Length: 164
Image (tube, one colour):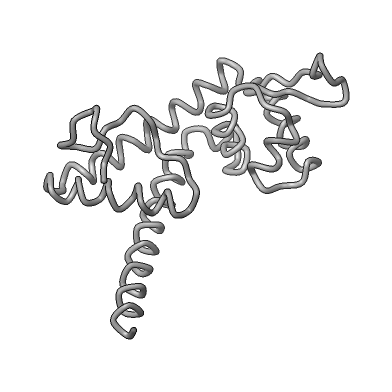
């Protein structure tokens, strides 16, 4: 059992180190829009980008915040013309939200910055290291319940064959 504990400690340490790196990348990628959105607001934009038009209460659940907190974030994002909020025509007590064109542009810009910085790091790795990283990160994401990004096959794998 001690070997398992050592392995777990090594994995945890590696993930914490990678986490610090990724937080830095995330922070730098938001610098270009920092005058317009906070990190929490950007998270809401990302959820809307992924889900499309969504009820405010659903977004609150996905973000792990109270509906009143989500409503305040939505109000600020709507005032900045980054989201469109409307009354649900099927239930007038509910608000529906979706990204505006400008909100989509902000998400795309920040995501492109993140991809570029991560891509520059990954480009310094060997093909075998890249394949191992994809397998490991997909397993980590699956264990956490995070959906795997669709449409991007791991390097060196045919598009019609899933990893694993």
